[in-house]
Each structure stands twice: as C-alpha cells, then as structure tokens.
Length: 276
Length: 299
Picture 1 (cartoon, chains in turn red, blue):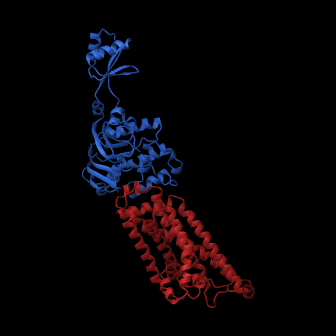
Picture 2 (cartoon, rainbow over the protein chains, first blue to last red):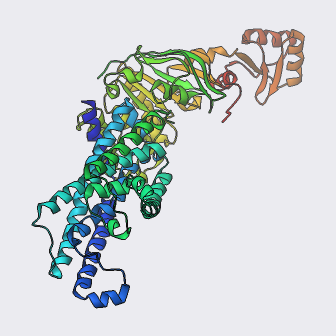
Picture 3 (cartoon, chains in turn green, cyan):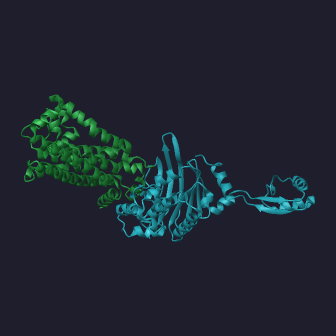
C-alpha cells in the first residue's frame, strides 16, 4: 500500500517538472535524425551504388542485411541515454534540491521510496521507448518507402524487435536510478552518463571486438547487452568482426542485473546516510 | 485533527566524527503550548530536530513522539508536521509540490488547496517555486506541515526571512495551534524573535541543555537590581558608599546591586540626598538568554 502511494508520488514528481518533456523532445529529434537520415542515405546508396562507392568507399551495407531493423533500432541504440539520464535525475535531483527531507518525512521508509523510484522509472523508460520507436519507425519507414525498399512493418519479427526495444529502454530507466543513487552528485551523474554512453563504451566495444577473448567479455557491456536484447544495432555493422552477442533474453538479464545491483548497493550506502 | 502528543528527547547525543553536535540532551515538549527551542547558531538545534524526525541517526539516546520514533509512526504526516528548511524543487509549483507529498502520505488531494488557503498562498499556488521570496517559501513550508492536520508541529527557524506582517501572522498562527491543544516546537537563534510567541523555552548551547521552563522563569533567573538617580550624583555616590552598596554609573543613574529599592532609598535618606529616580531594574530576557548560552553566536 505504501509502495503504491510512493510510486504515485514518484510519477507526479516526474511529470510536474519540465525535464521529462525536454528529454522526450530531444530523444525524438535525435532518433528521427538518425533513423530518417541514415535511412535516406542507405536508400540513396542502394539506388546509386557507384556514386556511393565513389563518395565514401566502405559505406555500403553488407549484402543480406535487413535495413528496417537496423534503422528502427536507432531508438534504443542511440536513444538509451535519455531514460538513463531521467532515471539518474530522479535520484540526484532530490539531493541537489534537498527535497529528500519532505520525501522522507512523508515516507520514512527509505527502501520504499527507492523501490518506488525504480518501478516508476522502469515505466517512464518504457514510455520514452514507445516515443523513440514511434519516431524511429515513422522516420525510418518513410525513408525506406521513399526509395521503394521494404519497411518490414508487415513482419511480426519487426514488431517483436520494437517490443524488446521498449523493454530495453525501460531497463535503462531503472539503471539510471541505480547510477543516481550510487553517484548522488547530479553533475557527476550527468557527466558519467554522457561520457560512458557516448565515448567510453563505444570505444570499449570496438576494442573488445578485436580479439575473441575480449569479445566474449565485451558482449556483457551494457550497451552491447542492450543491442543483444533488441536484436539489431548499427554497432553490429560499425564494429567489424564483433559477431559475438548474447541471446536477447541474456541481454535483458544483464541490464536488469546492472539496474538491481547498482540500486541495492546505492540503497545500502548513500541512501541510508544522514539527510542534511 | 490529531491530538497533541508530547515530544520526548532522552539522553540524546549526536557525533559527527570528532565533533559532538548534541551532548546527552533530555527534555520534554508538552501539548497545548508553544515551546521555543533556543540557542545560538551551531548549538545543535537543527541536528536535534533532524534526529527527532528520523533524518539523521542518533549516536546515543532516543527522540520520540509519545514513545514512538518518527519512523515507527503509522501515519507520519497526520501525526507530525515538520518544516526544517525551505527547500523545494525550483521548477515545481507550490500546488504540485504539495500534491506530490499528499500522494505519498495517502492524503486527500483536497487538502492541498485547503492548506494553501490557510497560509495565504492560494494566489501564488500555480507559480514555480523558483521565483518565490524567502517569506513565500516559509509559508509553503508551513503549508506542507498542515497537509495531514497533525497534532504536533516541529518548525526550524520558521520566522527567519519573514517581513513584519508575516511575523505578526505567524505568531497568531502558532498560538492558535497551541490553543487547539497541539504540541508546537519552534526553534530560533534569537530569543527576541520568538519571545512574543512562546510560552515555554528549552535553551541549549554547544549541544547541552542550559535551561527548560516558562518564559517568565527565564526572566526571574537574573537577579533584579535597582536604579537610582539624583540631581547631585556625587552626593548619591557618597551615600551609597556609606551604606556599603555596590553600584555602577549608567546613563540614567546608578545601577545598584540591590534587589530592594527601599534599601537604596533608605541609604539616600540617611545621606540626605535628593532622589530623582528610584525603581527596580529587571534585566532583559535577551540578557539572561545570552548569559545562559555563553555570550553570543558561535556560528
């Protein structure tokens, strides 16, 4: 009962400030640009293979690659940073604005509050996932259809991919909560999210793909696990030779495990400290 | 309305590393009165209140509401209303701020406009808190305490930052709460700020209890003295010397270390000195407060 109320309160916290829709708009714009833009480029390259080869050399997609899943998965493969950020801000914002005092006065059981953040950010992450996939499918399918290519929208595999993608975005929201409660400092959390997702992990994934041994470790990187869960990603093209991926359900378990472990460790340490 | 229950602090200590913020503190706050929790900055007032409200852990001792610690209260916001610091998310409106916590505490959302009205904030309810003055923040913090219509109020420096009109308003507000039988604990580092609002005082300095009692008892603590003046001060000085009375010369006459003005008058009569003034001097509350807490702020 307390948990239900606390979850309701956490949803109100998210939707009574501007951050959620600012991030949603940025996410939609970013995903639309990547999916629509890349889709248009691939469509053009398919129609004009000679010109494309002259322009960029190694830009052609390996034969047999389905373009639709690749484009649609931009929603999670580049968009996952947004639910992480929102999840982390749900925790660090309380420290930054010193609102833990009224929060813990209204619900003195801190574990209940943290569990409510975890659950609510799973749902908010899924919501961002729905927005991201709506945009990536909309923009990507429009680009493909414009060049007369297959949109894959009549295939149940495509819709299963979208469903798994929404699940991945949900899990990223919960990972954000775990990161936020581990780090606590808002600026540090934002820097870590941006640096890790945009630089550190992409580099690690490329480096890990260079040998079989590292590749078997690299597949457990959160972004790689996420792509495994979704089932497609432009990283699979970009990082050559990285053929080793987890099963989709393993990828999901890795993400869920990261979220739970980070949240539990944070909950046992920073979350129990004196609030001043 | 929930009934007032006593606040019981017993043997409470709180250490931050080598620093002792609260040192074996014990006192009880009774319902039906406004109790001032006084001490200079850094005396340990806020720490005591934070421990009482379960936000910080005690190093030793207990702090309870009628025997129950805050975390054990089945419906905390309906038992205790607390305002510790006027901090809010700047991007949220006052109404939404209150809604968030009404939801968490399982209170009816109809309480939100009611408490906004009670603190005179209805007009600004839909503005973002980031643009509020300190006085408005203080009122919003009070609105939060009223959400559950509790029987106990714990307010940390609620008068800080209020304009004269706001100070007058909060005095009436606190006294109304006490008159309704609620327990009201109000901290301040300035006695003068609360002396017109409080019935009882709990005074601490350096984490230790200095005094508990009624406001009047604080006044009686300091030994009264007598003020005497004469057109001929030299003659009066001689007469006081002759009677063996200790005195110091002030702007409005001699301050004599003698509680009974009659004895000073008698000394003047014996010396044949004309008196221009003769009355008892009661030292100010602030003066006895400062002597209790060791002379001033140590922030």
